[in-house]
Structure formats: structure tokens, C-alpha cells
Image (cartoon, rainbow, N blue to C red; front, top):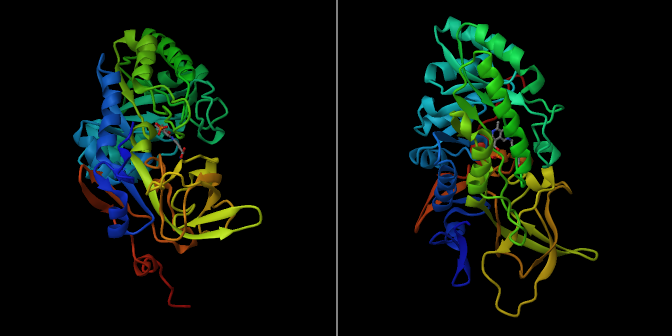
Length: 421
Ligand code: LLP
């Protein structure tokens, strides 16, 4: 459930009519709903209410400071994968004790920043990383809590580009080598082994891969404890999918996911950490765009909108589907017209959808791309020298620009021409 609904024939974000935002900020623009973010975060908390837990929002899904601040004030921890994300979490007021640091390629600078700023745990993904972190921690006179990310070799049954838990993926250490890697970790100065970490993929629509992976984790936890490691935390990663199509069977709910967690690892007495990103932010955002032209092609019509692949890359990158809806509901009896919805960027890949029935007349009409709150603005670029897409946060009948649209001059001012040119 989200808070983007029609009222009086006009699509609203909570109590704000989207045309009002388009008028004030222009298009394209991302619009997020505070109530939806809050609701989705609380669903995970309820799903794990039976145990000690921390819901760490995956910052990569939506890293706007206002979004992080909202979630942080509800008690969220953060899962970060770069020095930049770590800095964002701190800047949003989330204390280091609630930040976990994941990622296969943390640099020395990134690790140092997190050690000095405070960190709940590093999720370490390789032996070289263990060695690097140990020597840095020693130099800094610190003892850093770590979990090792274990690759359980489970098929997450999701898009190949976002599956992470198979042995051929670059992530984590193979579960078959976990014991020796934990032995190494325990022997290294400056590190304190506290847990086990896993993340098997994103947009999972089936709970079975979780069940398989978490069973393996429970078994590993018992083995590692028998080896003498004090495992007190399990980081179960993120990945629970969202409905991208209104007319489809919805993926499992956080509550059902929580039951799988209880069933598989619930009896170990560990504190549970999870790292959902998409499930919290995905359906809490839309991308609002205007129609530039309706163009007749050979046997098909093109609706050319002012949002493009640089603003929302998921369709071009993963063939992802986003429902596209008119902001003003058509009058009853208006026939929908099948159109290809495309952006202005000079690539055929800049196509959002083919032959979607849209009851639009043309220039100036507003459309909304649903389910765009996660991996939308964060993956945007300035390709074709299109200024970075702005973001707006709605709460009830208020809205605020939480990232303004840069002017073209601002965009150009970042470049430097050397004096020898
Ligand atoms: N934890 C780790 C270690 C991750 O790598 C990820 C996502 C998450 C948590 C959060 O997963 P979520 O709950 O959001 O599924 N750009 C792609 C998604 C890439 C996900 C990468 N890792 C997309 O647009 O679908």
C-alpha cells in the first residue's frame, strides 16, 4: 500500500495534488511520500518485534538526506557501501552505532572514516579485506566489530544483474571456507568477531531462497560457536521484492518474511539485523514527468516525455517495468491509446514502456512513473547534459524540495578548462 491515490480525478501524493508540485518545481521530478516510507519501515519492525533487532535501511536505494533523516528519526539503522553513504548517514543524524558498512571493495580511506566516526560493524567480504582492516584498526588503536559476509550459494530467482548469493557472484566468501576465514579473523588484532552476514539478492518475490540461505546460516552459526566464536548478531541482508505491477500477485509481505526469519534463525538468541532498501522506499516514490510531444510513427505512436533514461535507468538497464499512469484521470468513456513511452535521450534504449494504453491527448499532460522511490534518483546521471533530476518530499498537505534542480549554469560550472587550451 502506498499513499499515491486519485482524489477528485487527480493523482495525489498524500494530500498534495501532483500538478501543484509540477507547477512549483517543474518536471521531471521525484516525489516521495513520508507516510509510505514510515509505514513500510514500521512493517519490518513489526515483523521482527518478536526479537532484538535493527532495521538498517540500505542507503543505496535512496540516499537523500531528508529521507535518511526521516527513517533515522523512526529508529532505523543504515546499511552503507561507501564513504559517501557513510557520511550521508551521519549527516542525517544516524549515530555510528547504528551504521553497518557493507561492500566488496572498501578503501582504506573509507574504512578509516568509519572507524573514526563510529561504526556498528563492518561486513567483511574477503581475506585481504580482513587483513587491511586489521592493520588499519591497529594503527588507529581501535578494535572494530566485524561480521563476515558468507555466500551461501543459493539461487535468489531474481534478475541476473541483481542476484548476489550464487557462488559465481563476486560477493562474500564461499560458505565452504567460512570456518577457516573466521579462524583467521579471530586471530587478527584490532578485529572483534560479532556476527555473520548474508545478502542473496534484490527484488526477491519468493521466500524460499531466504529459507534455504538462512537455514545454512543457522547451521554455520552453530558450527562457528562450537569453534569458539562469540556470534551474537546475524545480518540477513535485504532484498524483499515489491509489486511493480498493480495487476500482479504481490510478493510476500514483511510479516511473512519475519516468520521465515523466526523459523530459520529464531532460536539462536542472536540480535537480528536486516537491510531492506527497495521495500521501504520503492513504492514510496514516483517520478513525475510531462508530455513533450505525441508523435505518430509507422504503426505505432510515441509519447515523448521530459523524463529520460538518465533520470530513471531501470527500464534501460534491467528491462524493468514501472506502471505509467496519467496524473489527471481521463473522462469516463475516453479510449486509451497504445503508445510507446520514450524519453528525449538519443538512444533507442531510452524507452520506458511499449504499447501501453494511455488516455492522453498530448503536450503538457502529466504522467507518473510508479514504484520509483528506490534505485531511481540515486542512479540518475547528467547524460546528454540533462541537469540532475530534483526530489520533493511530501508529508500530509506539505511538500518540500529536498534536492533542487541544478541550473544549466551550475552544471557547467563544475567543469574546468585547462589554461593550455
Ligand atoms: N544489502 C546489500 C549488501 C545489498 O547489496 C543490497 C542491494 C541491499 C542490502 C538492499 O537490497 P533491496 O532491499 O533494496 O533489494 N539497482 C538495482 C538494485 C541493486 C541492489 C543492490 N544491492 C535495481 O534498480 O533493481
